Length: 461
Ligand SMILES: NC(=O)c1ccc[n+]([C@@H]2O[C@H](COP(=O)([O-])OP(=O)(O)OC[C@H]3O[C@@H](n4cnc5c(N)ncnc54)[C@H](O)[C@@H]3O)[C@@H](O)[C@H]2O)c1
Image 1 (cartoon, rainbow, N blue to C red):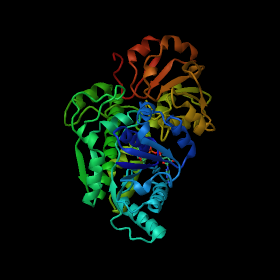
Image 2: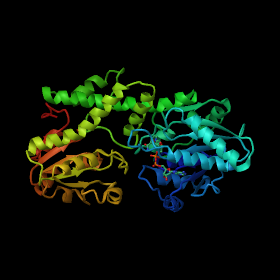
Image 3: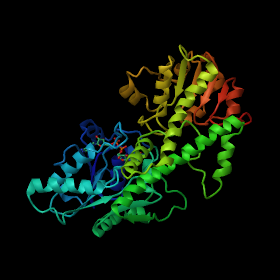
Image 4: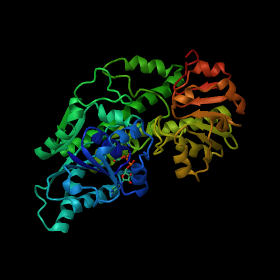
């Protein structure tokens, strides 16, 4: 089948490359010409496991372009909209990119039946809205009746950055929403190799053991759109819940690691998303929970649980500052080292990254902040070069003269650090492990004071 992907960011590029590998003819379109140049040169603009390798393998089926004329929309069976929907200051998602994409697609559709798919996370009702934008744009271009030439669908994306290709090829489920049966049929056939799991697995992206056929959830447009928001809100709530319990654990002298294990083994609860720490960040949870709340407000529903999850989450970042203040008494003039800038390991994404927020709070209190990241430094220097944060190339440099170090991102290389030797660079041997990622006893044996999240009784750990 022929597919056009509009917007080749984390979601669009992953989807396009995976579909091309599965044998479809894919055209990846983006308005940023530099991205397209990089892609044409075989380079991925984002850090994502296996992406460049799969781009190379799928090359015969892949085309990259910054031109709507060249993308082949008029011959496409499916056109995905996977542009960004960043958060507006009032919490609503910014739909300007979706609007532009919809109009441009409408202007380029041919007479062939095409399914237009919202893969971007968009508010409930966006399917109808995009459909009307496409319809208007089509009519203006050729005056022909748009009926029967396209159908609208919603296909929310659940990939996680860092394991984006794995999640695309081996998803828990595929959700497809549409009002017309034909749209569901087209998308079911596009995803057939994933649904049936009959494509050859790759050495660098192995199929999980025992992984079988993937369930498809077909729904109406509004339900598919709400599934995405409800799923992200649920995960956000789960993380905030364990973080709230972690605060209590610390006060009563209990260990959140033992508690999380104790409750997570209950199959009704499950152990995932029960890691206490400084909370979630990234491009999705923050903006999607905000969007869910603003949508619910239109219907005068308070969405209290989701609101509280957000409050708890952002308070965790302030907690880091309070904890340091408690230890160091004065933050003015202190040097604080931050290990990890990306919002989580295995990505270079800095959107709503806790590290940047924590750094801002610390600098507001007069501290000097130095930061390191094994992958996201280039992005950090490019986008946050004038933030006041000192970006350092090595862990040794970041620890130099530090009064405390805060581990913010759980990069595996930070687990291997030799604290015995590293602590000599620091002014005060104090480590705040914002992800409960290190073994407290190992850090303490190296002569540093260890502080975790919710680890009131972690000395033996
Ligand atoms: N990143 C994730 O982990 C993730 C997971 C699930 C869902 N989502 C959702 O998917 C959507 C895309 O997210 P992302 O992280 O891939 O965003 P991104 O910012 O990485 O990529 C979006 C791309 O769209 C391009 N674009 C903007 N307007 C365009 C236009 N008119 N025509 C062509 N290209 C255009 C941009 O240049 C950019 O390259 C968002 O709605 C997001 O909420 C993201």
